[in-house]
Amino acid sequence: MRKEERHKLIMREINLHNKVLSADLSTLLNISDDTVRRDLKELAETGKLLKVHGGAASKSFVSPFNTQNEVYALNEKKKIAEKTLKLIKNEMVILTEGGTTILELAKMIPENLKVTFFTISPQVAITLSDHSNLEVITIGGKLNKNANLHVGASVINQLVDIKVDLCLLGANAFSSEEGLTDMDWDIVQVKKAIIRSSKKTAVLSISEKLNTAQRIRICDPNHINYLITELSPDSPLLANYRNDNLKLL
Image (tube, rainbow, N blue to C red; front, side):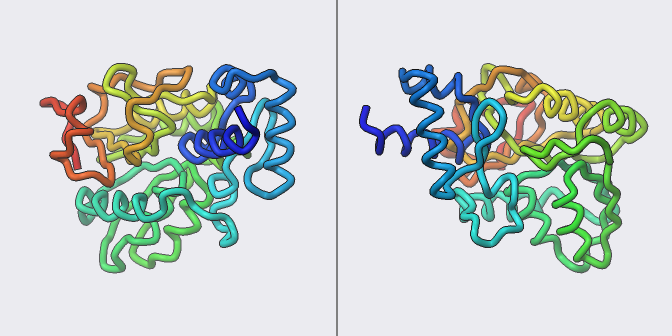
């Protein structure tokens, strides 16, 4: 495989899943670990990604406030954010994580909406704080620098004492067989705690992330109440996700 093709495939994996492991890229592309390291070094030097321990991460995911970072599938994520607004009503209590799609949602909250938001994302909290009628409460702990999310036992312990109307989760990967999955153990544990603290759960995902799976399961598909994509709910691509427990938006 030519280097240009490898770089294109590497960037697609990073744009889709925000972070990739070198070992997974080696298997996916059928190349040596040394070749993966060289490719990631070259892409990092040209400013296309950030090298992190064991792999690489999306620049827009780690530093979404940097206007020079191009957000992947931005129009699709804005459409998902607009759909998600339909679930948010006055006086609700909502729990969110972070990510570029949820940041787009945070920017769109109507000024007249009165909602309490709990979040494990400092960036989401800052964005929500621009809205005068919102009460914003951060759940603090160790900062996972690759995802800019608070993780760890202190976060999980705080979540035990919370019961919210709705939680909003981004998707690293989601499938009708494996459910919601991720590759980071600490983030998975916090997301599990978020779901336990919520009456209903919504997953916000661009359609390219559907029918994919990562190494660690967060929850089965039947634990998700809403799946929100940029597609029409009657799209053939969503056929495997139609069931009595899951509402498509």
